[in-house]
Length: 449
Image (cartoon, rainbow, N blue to C red; front, top):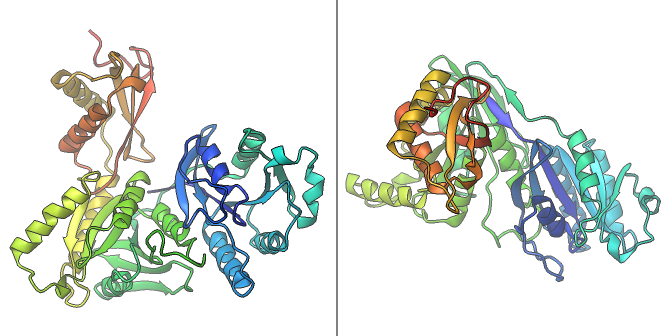
């Protein structure tokens, strides 16, 4: 089963306040804001939540007024946003008259048939501004905001959640969705084709355009698998013209649709920060992860000693996801291509493992007895009860008192012990902590005398 969070994309001209809006929604400073236009060089994305609704928030680079390239850039960005975003916010300025670029953006966005919000920012600079002043853009939902004074933000979010689909858990019996994620030229398409040719039957081949996710439906040992090949994500600073800013959204959309992600990295270029960021994104999305070292055949020294050395280095680079599987592959020779399918099916099975609540709580009691909870600020958290989400088995809810003071190292210890006892190899798991009295509605606390 797959869990998909809605995606909200923020678009607009440069220096209209997109990054400030992004930071205000997150209530923390994630994007660099400055008075100079064009500060954001590529897309930023973070998980956000409001009144129980979770969603991905995307802050994109500003559309620049380049007469010879502007129209093409608009066409490409809007098309890509329409493909992947569930809701789009068009941000303009309250203190500046509507520009031609604003009109072009609004026209293109309206053609997508997606929910469009017109966010008129910097209202503090034009107190006389009203929504009627901006009706001519043709967007029905108009909201006046000021990120510097936190005005209109709550109203904007209240209306947003009405448009957002609830987080969904799609049950797909015997169907495993697998995406290939990575930078350009790391061998995704080669591996995609090699994986397709290795299978007993190709059910369907749906080729897409340059901005789509290419998909192919295949069968492996009686199981249905959908492979998704995504566009490459460039390093920060390499995205200049804007046409690839939404490649991050496309890949995020593929990750959200996936059960297991294959993160490809070039054997000749392993220590790349962007690869690690993508792995973190996959982990944050709660998906299965296989680190795939591609182009293994291109290395001159491919001895077991070299592989073991590289494996140790890679594990250290990705120590935030020690549970991730690691495979060295070659699309030229076909090395370990079939092994990927074996791992995918194993990880999928692991992700859907259900544990009896009584067994989980016996484990919790043993973990606490072995190592009592460590707290912050001289607090002593108590953990009383644990449950597993049946619709999303990689999520665990733990109830107790003063859980907000639980030390991060103790949470890591609990995850390590949970994996040691129950497995969950190759997939992210999440522990959620909730305040609860020592006696829980599900029954007697396992830690109570």
